Length: 134
View 1: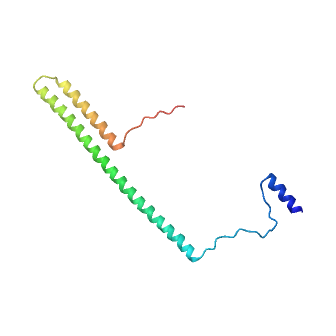
View 2: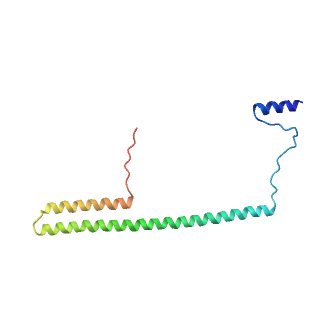
View 3: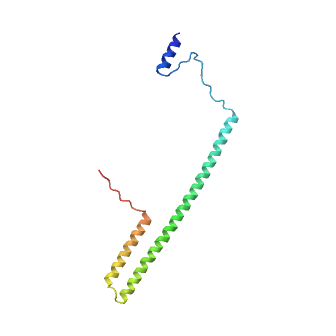
């Protein structure tokens, strides 16, 4: 009688359950060699799939990096060709006394500064200016 009253009290208030039989226990899984072998074969299959995924992911990342580098080289070459043509055109105009030498010096200095900024960007990456606010 006492066990039933405790069981009713606990199950109603705390949602706990006391068993009348203390020997009731959950039984574990019977690990036979076949079951262990099946688990290890499943783990082996998953490991192979993971390794092939990582290999494919690595190849795609390498391809993306190479494609980006190729694109960057094309852009730099195009910009340098344009800047070189501007310098050559300014030099020709200075040679025919159409433009003063100071204008050529300004254009050359501007071009060299731009080239240094461009090279710095490609070597060190884009600079992000963040200001910490207190």
